[in-house]
Length: 214
Image (cartoon, rainbow, N blue to C red; front, top):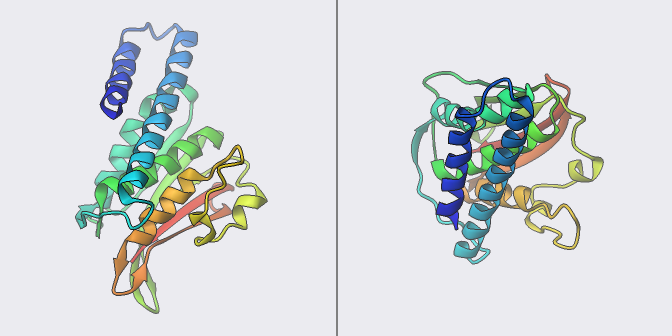
């Protein structure tokens, strides 16, 4: 099913190239379908990862990766939707910034955050990455910010540990945050674990999703 979804996404992207640019209605419908297919693909990967992990520790393949490359790939995969919806997606990162992490899982985490930001943002979404110095040592900070209305208070009051308990009885299951928290927490460096956080404000005045990796 995952391969079928990937082929579907590629077909949608190919189809968009053959639709006249002046046919705005068709492009709007294609971009919406492309967006929903990306969300479905992300959710499927999340469910498969949770199943394989047995709802326990996620298996990691940690290596050194260039952050700029990861953010560029995310921008490229969402470019068509951004172009059709008039949303500017930027990333801010030093070209040579590298860190040790599981690239596939971190890509999924960040891409899901970007997809949500594109859904609720108005005109702009920014991905940024930098190194923070804490009492325990250095850590990688990656943030996804938008200029939307921000997170609801119920989400802001959720701590990193509480995210590990998705409420399947509610419309918003919190599966994305649950999965993001699992990915961050699985990155362990000498007892220091990664974490996610949510807040409103930032430079764009909307929601800000942050992940910190030790």
